[in-house]
Image 1 (cartoon, rainbow, N blue to C red):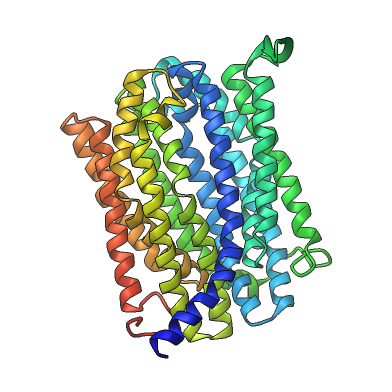
Image 2: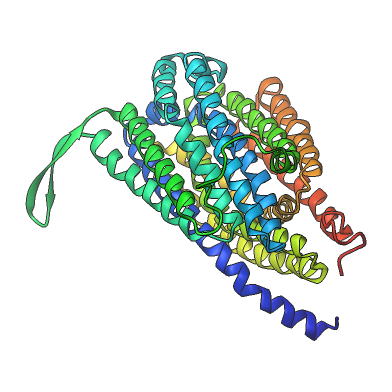
Length: 464
């Protein structure tokens, strides 16, 4: 294929990429916007409230990402089934996803609620806010079954090429969360709107109100996502037998288990990372929590493109379309790098302004802005690794990403942070430098997989 033909074929992929990517980007952007509002509302209560909410946040990542790994197994299986044009096979996988939701939801509900009294202590949270952090965590994880439904069924729908329904459900969840926050966090108060005094009712529950609002929103999202899957014209589990199906579960678990170990290992690394940061004091904890929230908005292009890349790679693999696989990689990576350069530039320029949205503490703002400007420079590099890993998930290759992510997390981020913060007594800036080193390592190894062609099961030699 000559250069002009390749360019035309690459352009022909753009509609499919954009169609799959934009709803996911909008969904994540909405989630991030609401998270901004959430953190700002809690942040208005003071630094201790922000620390109490953020101190156990990495445990939330641990649970959510482990459940998400199950979804990756179904994503690879269903996307490949659609590429093979085998719709009944995809529907069988959806019925097994129901079992995955029930098992993971129940198991993690029991674990999180049982461990809620000790999680803040394990996370080395300041003793003065441990009780509040524990209460927040317990309430937040009461509806874990519904959170599992949202995560796994959302991935099933995306694998079937439907990214708009998860987007709508995500918007519903986030709007519900914000509205309930407004009434549950703050007390009854009088505000002036267009020269008219209005009484706004409120429960005045502060941090506990934020937890209740999130729990209700997660419950609404899980119910609605379940209903959406059962109404789907192709992959609805309705009428399917809800018993383990080895022919479906074996290949799904073969993909999911390495990804689950990866996410568990890296998320546990986030827990260790946050625990070391929590030991640096309230200012560092608050700055880290807010900076993480701010940064998440600027990863939206990366994870939106990852969803499109995973689904399309799975489709191409199922159809055994070698040319499409090759073009997909180069096309998505070019788009990804351009988007992440733009988002990283914006993050660098507006770092201090964005921190100021969530805190009035000048120490927190300046420290958070410093680490955000540092990480902004690494955004395009991290974006490359996100997309390549997504394509590998789509074709069911999850063992190699597992190895690389564990090495990066524990060999670079955690070991480096331990040496810098616990032995050398450096602060948050050094910890984030170790995080950036981890991201650059992932860029190097995933770029090698792409350039050598080792990510692609349909092609052994270098991608041209």
